[in-house]
Image (cartoon, rainbow, N blue to C red; front, side, top):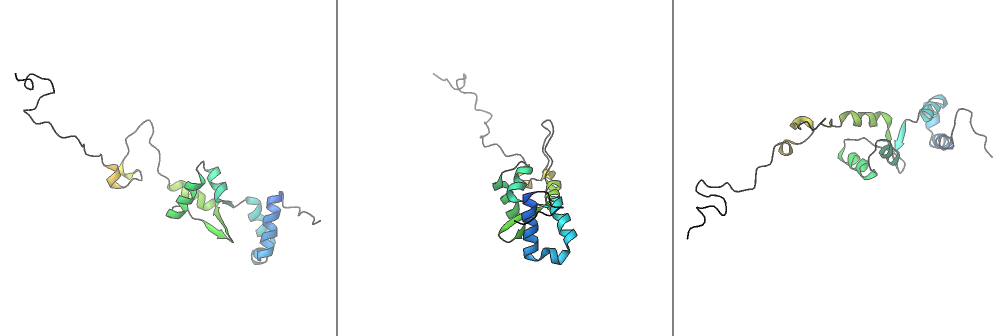
Length: 138
């Protein structure tokens, strides 16, 4: 059985280091740099990202598809670096406090920020309420 490296603390980190050796990443950036990256946990899978940011996996994939969130491919897996996650969080629109009115600058398109026109027909000046004296001529 293979002995565990002293600077790698979990089975997950062990698998990551083995992958980094296999793909040549350790040779390219050096053993110390690879261990530092692995121990810092510099990236999350889409599922981990969604859980940490309290959003659904579907919403995370929508954010990736829209380009607001940057994902990187490692083989078949999509990862999101902590740096990219922090940039995404900084660009989110701020939530209104205590029912404050939304402004067009709150991240909404202009056509959504404007109030909708009423669909009710305006009453004419001669038309009174239903059942009024002008309506009940006998």
